[in-house]
Length: 254
Image (cartoon, rainbow, N blue to C red; front, side, top):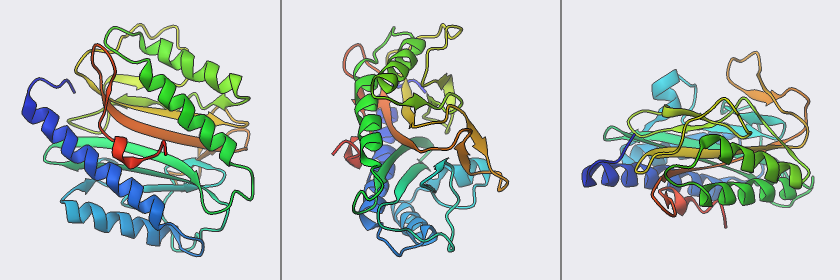
């Protein structure tokens, strides 16, 4: 969406705060021995307290309040009472929701407890690349150039990117114009970021895979060549200069 009046900015600020705080509190709540369903229910309780509705459930009928993916899963992991979190797990939580007709999206990967499996460098790379990508976004910048930046930074760090998962426009629904904001240079995408528009920027940084495949459950995504993937995401408002990061209070950069 494009912000055209103060009431729209306030609406986006409210829902962005909801998803950001829900993500932050879910990350703090996660403990070894807990199931992903318990963690999701905690997030769902927070969303209900704020009066917000789960975006993936509302839009796609997703069987959970939030998406929780672990270890070799990339995204869209279904919360389960059979999946128990363990020390050193690589966890991704993606929280998107609707409130008052406005939608926001954010996510982050983290290591649970001690980094027993050396996932932290991959997590740190994803966070660093997202920060650099967002800092380079302003009105008039080609979307493909941000994809180029993400891909080049990943290569420089010894990693790859997932090419069929992207950022997107957001605001009045979960996915909007300008369509896909890829993690690689797409020479055919001639579109540019527009001042006052709202987008969700996300990185998918990978050790081995470049394509996300869907498992038989119809939701969970894993890599075509295995390995691990980290994702970090902010909802932002584009300006003539530094973007306004609406979900900054999720503290994924801390």
